[in-house]
Length: 325
Image (cartoon, rainbow, N blue to C red; front, side, top):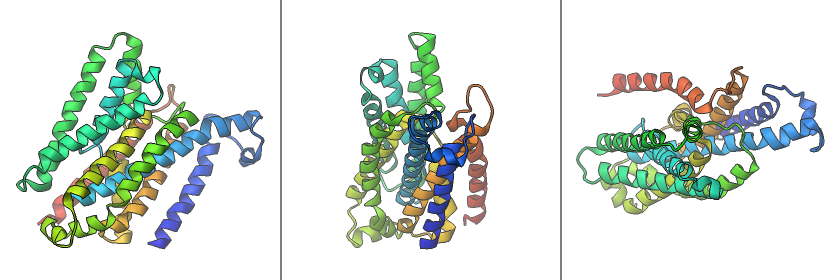
C-alpha cells in the first residue's frame, strides 16, 4: 500500500510539472525557475499554477468521496453524481448564478453549492435508507430520482434565463471546466474542501465495520447515525464547494476507487488515501489532455471526463453482472 501511494505521488509530481508547461503555448522546463514578473512567470504562476492546484483539490475530493460512498452504501457504482450530490451542488450554484447572487459575493457560489449538495445528499439517504427493505438498490434509485429532480431545476433555470448571456454562462458552467480559474477560486474552495475531507477521513474504521453488515457494525460499537451524518456533511462540504466553482465533473469519483482497489484489497479504509491520490492524478491528467485538444473554444473538462469515463462505466456494469451470483 505504501508503495502504491509513493508511486501515485511520484506520478502526481510529474503530472503537476507537465500541467505547468502544457497548453496552447508550450513552455520549456527552465520557465519554472523564471521570476514572477516575466511573461513566462505570469503564465506559470498566475494562470497555470492555480488551475493545477484546483485540479489536484477537485480530483482528490471526488476520489475520496467516491471511495467513502462506495464503502458506505456497499455499492461499487456509488459516486457523488450517481447519488445526486453533484447535481444538487450544481443546482445550488446555478441558482446563485441565475439570481445574480454569485456576482454579489464570491462566497455565495460555494455556499449555495454546499447547501444544494447537503439537501440532495440528505434527501437521497432519507429516501433510500428510510427502511431496511430495498438496501442499496433503493439508495441508487433514490439518487437517480434526486438527480432527475435537480436536473429539472437546472433545465428550468435555462428555460427562464433572463437573457442569452445568462443561459450561455449557466450552460458552459454546467459542462465543467478548470479554465480561467484564479487563486481567488482556490482560496474559496480550500477551507470547505479541507473540512469535508477531514469529515470523510473520519469514517474509515466505521466503514470497515459496516462492510460486515449494519447489525454487525452496530454490535461493534459503530454509531450508524453519526456515520451517515459524517458522510452527508463531508460530501456536501467538499463536493458542494468544488462543484460550485468547477461545474459538474463526473466519473472521477467512480473510477478512482476501482483503479486502486485491486492493489490494496477490499477493506474500505485502505482504499481512501489511494483513491484520493488517484483522483487527483486522473483529473490532472484529464485536464492536461483536454488542453492538448486544439479546439476553439477549449474542450470542457466535464465533457472530456464523461467521454473517457462512460466506457469504464459500461465495463464495470458488465463485470458486476458476470461476478454476481
